[in-house]
Amino acid sequence: MSQTPNQPIAPPIIDLPIKTSNSGFYQGFITIVTVPSKLIVSLLILWTILFPTHALQVLKLANTNIIREFSGWYVYLVAFLMLVALILAIFPKTGSLRLGNPGEEPEFSRFSWCAMLFGAGIGIGMLTYSTAEPLAHFGNNPDIIRGTVESATAGAVRPAYIYTFLHWGFSAWATYALIGLAVAYVAYRRNLPLTIRSALVPLFGKSMSGPAGHLVDIVAVVATILGVAVTMGLGVEQFIAGLYRIGFGDWLMNSEGTASASAIITALILLVGASTLSALSGVGRGIKWLSNLNIALSLLLLTVFVIVGSGLLGFELLFVGLYDYILNLPRLAISIWSQDGTPIGDALATWQLDWTIFYWAWWIAFSPFVGMFIARVSRGRTVREYMMGVILVPSVMCFIWMAIVGGTAIEFELNGVAQGAILNTGISDQLYATLSFMFDPAIAMIMSCLVVILLITYLITSTDSAILIVNTINGAGGEDDESEHRHHIIFWGLALAFVVGSMLILGGIEAIRITMIIGALPFSVVVALMAISIVKAIIFDLIRKKHGVWTTVETDEVGEASHEAQDLLR
Image (cartoon, rainbow, N blue to C red; front, side, top):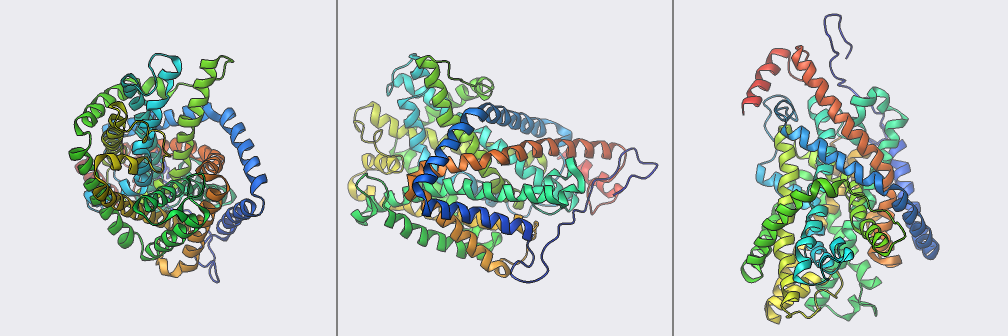
């Protein structure tokens, strides 16, 4: 839209033409994005299957160099994202802007919306790390490395929760929130395609229609597949561990006590098959139904831990941990520990690379999927409601889970009941091990079945959502009937299964983590640009409103001014 002589600022761009195929196998898709994305993922799968040893060596070398050279970049980027998210949420003029036309109502109820946020973003990781993360930091954290507290003692619990909350708190959800906001803002207010490249239009204009936009979408698709692969890998391993606990047979485990190749393949066939069927039903049906089931089962399991587990200790850890986390967040958000040749300095740097930097890379790789999904279900909400909901609700749920479930496991170790049986088992089995000390064998088996069922629904929801988001990016943000893209949904379901399966068999979850960190680096640049772009878009819209220039597609100046004033008063 051009600027007229009497306007001090031009209206926003409301059209981003993206060429899609008109016929054939790729009808409705951006061929120059879809084909390279499929090719990159397919080549990765073939490489790991045909040359597993060489692939693992190269990936480990690349990972070591990337982590060492770009650790500072990840730390400062995530700190910047948290700061931007805070500013956008608390300022009245920015917070009152609506993701849609003024006065537009949200598509989903608040409960369903929160349930979908919960399921898509943290479900699987929360089940695995609700015990694994606090226990890991209970055994080793920076305070233990410095010698100020002893490992696996009562003194190690409080710092363990500082770092647990650091990794699963505002940093992750500020990243997701900004990516989703950058996409939703231009999609619902300016009618641009619901895709990653659209978020950069406020910075780069219509150049996003061309090669630069294609590159952004390819990077986003690959990052999404690799980010979701980590989550699926964790879920599959815990799913298999649960089946083994329930009594489905020794064939599920190999001689090293980890998931066997046959178990991994069988689990992926069942889970990805169900996910693909759910994806064919669309976000309004399959994902919404499963998300509501997820939240109900999660609350049931959490209630059991509150009543039967260490509920009192858990709430103490929650409130003390929150206090410590908020107090230490400004310092920890920008802390970088470098290897200095001393045992303590080198150990601190290694710990940060293995934990904090891994998480920051994981959240960034996961952000196109979660951000796009959140954008897709958040139309009609104000920026303030969106930011507060996306950042606070899931973060608080993570804190509650980590405190109560992890606190129960820690108390069994502190009082000598577990005698290392929980602390020393694999992360996929720690939740089941905790349940085995809470109940007699029969009840413990029933509770393990509940965890397995919850894992199934979370795995299906995450994979289902990822497939739909990848097709949305490849389809230039189109929302055609999923049945018309059945073959592409099936392809990406199979691709995810092969990435997860080949990597787990190649080198376990560590191989997937390494691949994800490598894939996250290119998209981290896009994330930084998206954060700058959404800030520019909102600032310019506020200037437009001040000068009476329209900022949404379907509302004239008078109507918009009236509705925006009402939004501001709410």
